[in-house]
Image 1: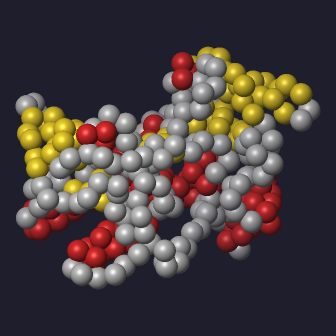
Image 2: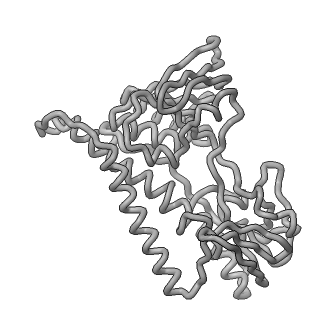
Image 3: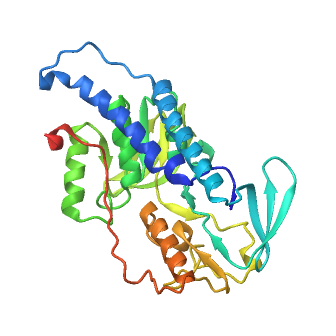
Length: 329
């Protein structure tokens, strides 16, 4: 196993579990500040984002230690470094502590995941925007957080930071939040976000940006009502994902990519190159941890002469903005 830096992948390190950890901290702040509604009288509540981050980091450290113990118990060799194919089934790993190793095997599995997409908006890259990774590492509270993207990742962090105490504006280029969800669900989510005084701007395309995230930023929008400008202190980009398939030498393997850069696989997760499989987000399927885990099961069972396929599995999904007091009641 060659891993660049995040043992266990994004789920325990930078995505699902860390976000839920900070969401829980935000829920506690929200409950304390609204405790009088339930008959509990408290003093003024303040938030220490340094402690929030420390709590999250401690959870991640525990999970990394667990995964390391699993590697040791299984006998799998863990190589910390950056891997690149130099031949059909030959990998060169640049080791994190210096030097390199060449690895060759009969069967290869590519599981390199995805990263946050940074849209080609003038001034956005120069603004050094937050992605979900940096948003979960903040040790301060943004005065006004602008969230570019109305999917579940952006909304989860938008609501958490609003409950911490930030002013929050969500910008979505489509006509509804969570564009792949049923409209009645999206409408209800919009209603309770606005109840919490989160500004939501729909059907708005960002066409320009100035400033630097963490200081001051101005986003220029094109809307049905004409041009609009929104000023804030920080900007979070949550506008989709792109695969981490560039620069890993797939051109040396015979593995074919689609037009978006995802690895093309069949229903058994086999690539166009014999003896090479792709799993998880980089294989272009639904981007969920339980999907990647089932991808593993498909390959494992088929190598043991099974007949598993991605074509006949049911795929549960859910969106998870934090609980609203109205809904939890």
